[in-house]
Length: 171
Ligand SMILES: Cc1cc2nc3c(=O)[nH]c(=O)nc-3n(C[C@H](O)[C@H](O)[C@H](O)COP(=O)(O)O)c2cc1C
Image (cartoon, rainbow, N blue to C red; front, side, top):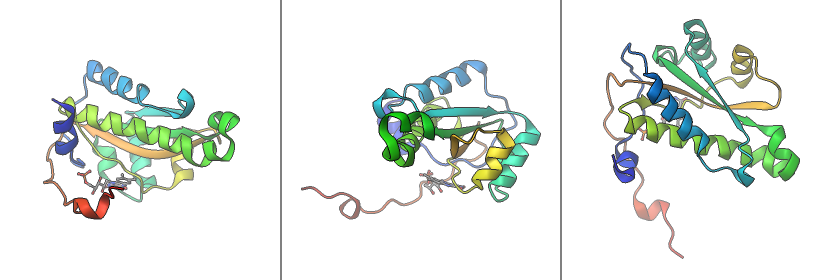
């Protein structure tokens, strides 16, 4: 699949088949996470691959009961490493760069998942301290996104985008 098709056709998937993701596909997802750009190439991010059902159920609870989180065979939790980046970039690193680093990885993950015939969705509505508790995160790791990944049971039709002239300013 070419990159433009992947960008246009990826959708947020919230219903998954009860089917495991093959190891080879998981390795490709890991590659996608790791090869994303990052500020100063510090890669101030860490990813938890959650397959354990009780842990996924707790994550769904932390995401205010978004039950589909637990229904995916894999939930990737992307975290920003706030302290590692701050050593070089101070407040800007802590408040912005590490979160953007994690976001870049998540976007690469989601596009790669789509290219592999998998579906995913960015889940950003969750209680941070509850997620941190479920995963036993150190204080330096801030969870940025929960990303359920699996084979799509249903792919929604594309939601509208704003008109180009509302979003883009040519100067
Ligand atoms: C920062 C962020 C937070 C989001 N949080 C949630 C969420 O908590 N639950 C959910 O179902 N979708 C969530 N989404 C997915 C959006 O609803 C979805 O991307 C948007 O409706 C556009 O649909 P599309 O991804 O199919 O193009 C989030 C997306 C982003 C980028």
